[in-house]
Length: 204
Image (cartoon, rainbow, N blue to C red; front, side, top):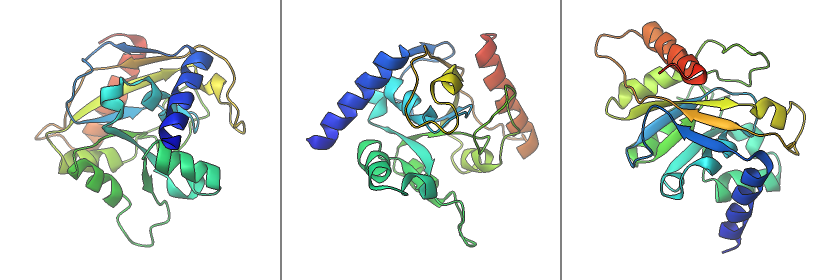
């Protein structure tokens, strides 16, 4: 009960603070299992996406987050594990496959939120995508891959700030896609990056 109350308060706080609008520009908010991928500018990115999703989708969607950052303090650990039920990945895996927790979540039927740039981007131009999303798509060819462009969140959570600032935010959801049968890793990653940019520009 306490965790549910915290989630309810958190979602209400984010919506009040940012006035977040979720625009389904390229696909519908249905129950299909998906890999949502987005641009990455702050630790609040996944929280805003997760909060903005309809309740029916939010309950089946888990963000991918860094274990080392989100388990540093008891408060962060409670938020990431109890409130968000995120998929925690370790960046220093000592030879183990860092994608294993994500693959297990997908196998269990969860949708996920992932940031292919791999790190927070301080610039206005997307960084090159890491290979992780390609490997996930290759192992799960039937799961839809959907871009989400986060606009203005860099101003809400500037680097070094833990308390968000009040700015309006828009999330734009693009077209669902999948890995082509003959598509190489580089072609796929470049196409996803291009489609995220097109989502930003509204040129779907």
